[in-house]
Length: 150
Image 1 (tube, rainbow, N blue to C red):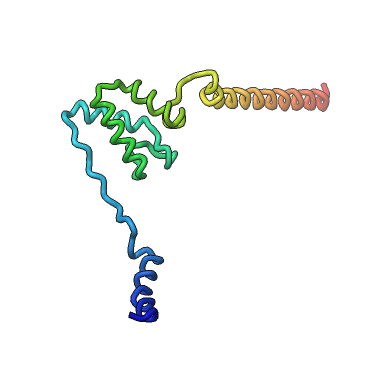
Image 2 (cartoon, helix red, strand yellow):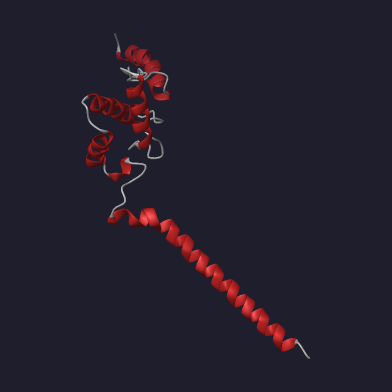
């Protein structure tokens, strides 16, 4: 075979690979987990809906289709079957991925701003609005008193 015939034979394959028609590793659909009973299934779904996908960041483990989310779902199920409690599973994932993996982080000194910051901003906004309303009403009252003639 000549180099020209090899190039001619491989050109369609390379073009298909470049356009995405041929995939190097086809995506394998995830088989749904097999639960031993209904209680295990409910616990699993409740737990993975409280945990955040570390890759997607705005989706729970239950909603994400990322490979790491699939792996973490399998790991959560394995830890459940080892007899770990929900708190132990969350602690394991926090130790591995940080507080970010939790949708509801713990209330600690380093998360106070996260928990109480919105209320402080709302409270400060209320004080500012109340001050502006008071100032305008006092200016309007003073102006009306000066213009009135009895």
